[in-house]
Length: 63
Ligand SMILES: [Zn+2]
Image 1 (cartoon, rainbow, N blue to C red):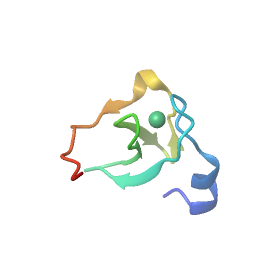
Image 2: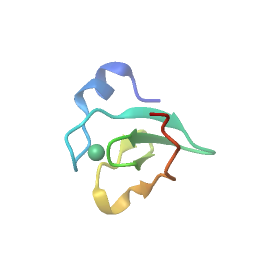
Image 3: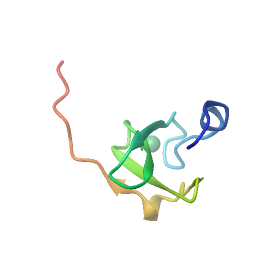
Image 4: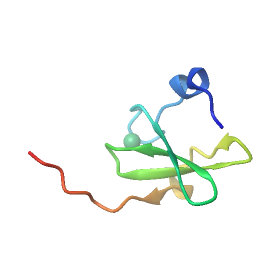
């Protein structure tokens, strides 16, 4: 688990925006909504590397 204090220090390496935690099937991920990327968390360590990020499926944003 990533605690909120640590999470508040983390930003997306691509856009410097806030990240939000998400639970994937087995492991945690940190999502950047702006970039639509999910960064993996391995052994509790966020892998904030663009190359490691997984693209999120575009969701329909009501607007
Ligand atoms: Zn981003």
